[in-house]
Amino acid sequence: MNKKDYNKLFVPTYKRDGAPLTEGKDVYLYDADGNKYLDFGTGIAVNALGHAHPALVKTIREQGKMLLHSSNLYFSQTQIALAKQLLKKSFGDRVFFCNSGTEANEAAIKFSRKWAKKISPDKYHVLSFTDGFHGRTYGALSATAQEKFHAGFEPILEGFHYATFNDIENTKKLLDQYSFAAVIVEPIQGEGGVIPATKEFLQFLREYTQQNSIALIFDEIQCGMGRTGTLWAYEQYKVIPDMMTLAKPVGGGIPLGVVICKEDIALALSPGDHGTTFGGNPVACALGSTVLEIISQKPFLKEVKLKGEYLKKKLNALKEKFDIIQEIRGSGLIIGIQLSEDPLPFINKCKQKGLLVVKAGHNTIRMLPPLIVKTKEIDKAVSILENVLASGA
Image (cartoon, rainbow, N blue to C red; front, side, top):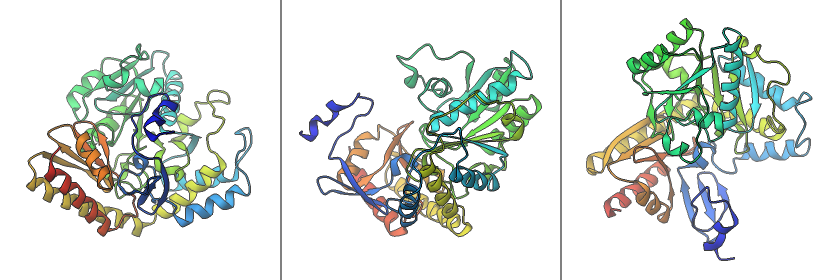
């Protein structure tokens, strides 16, 4: 089959081109045509330790010899080990394992509604924010305040409301109108354009939700697990939520989602209220323990922060050189480069020159390099981007 015909095999939910990817090593990917790519997309923030990391390969081999799947009707050693690590290194009291970010957000929404209904039968509304992204299944989609994702799939679920991100006055006005079960927010919006929340905004949300018995959910699916230079993004804000959703890098490349929650919310659930066949897969959880052990080390996180500052400095130098760059945003190694026009032609040219980056909202090029990236690889990526910007779209 000609590679131009590959798309005929699949439901057209993605617009793919080029040869299939065949191999990855460290910060590089290779395709079937022998092309080599510097991977600054990392599978949209999944491959935090790059490709074929020796510790992950070892974990897969060891766990693969023992157990590939077991039902959640039984205890799992790898689940117990990862749960203990996650709770020790976060604010949480209990965890729920699933398979993806959208599943984690679905679970968090359900958990908050079950908890809130014990307070009042009318307490079911959910607040989220403009430019946020929480997934594509119906609950998570309904919490995603972007009409382009809703188009053709209406009606969106009842009880979901949208306030303006980082706007305290607008948010309070909406919160005062309904009986809310939950507020869900990304500390740094990824798909929306790498837009950080302000400290004042998250502090307001924490104070209001505590005063009004509303569950505060932080979606750290893209910005958690060391991506910002701290293990969790909430640490930088000094604001502790009631629940936190994780996915993307947590399973080391194998599907794994997590809800970390406080005891009172967890105890609102009973057996049968929620479940998953594959969630907390033994291999995924074993990988999760390995990933967490590596990333949570203080010297590792310090390096992420320093490399992020280095990348941002290099990109700000480009901003001074090219008028098309409007703003550089982000923290650690989640960086957005907002352009004054559609970034897709530039992203495509970067790929042609051997650099993979990802598009985000507000005409933004998203850089999500592996957390193990070296400064020489940052230099190379910025050099490719500079050449692409100089040549124009």
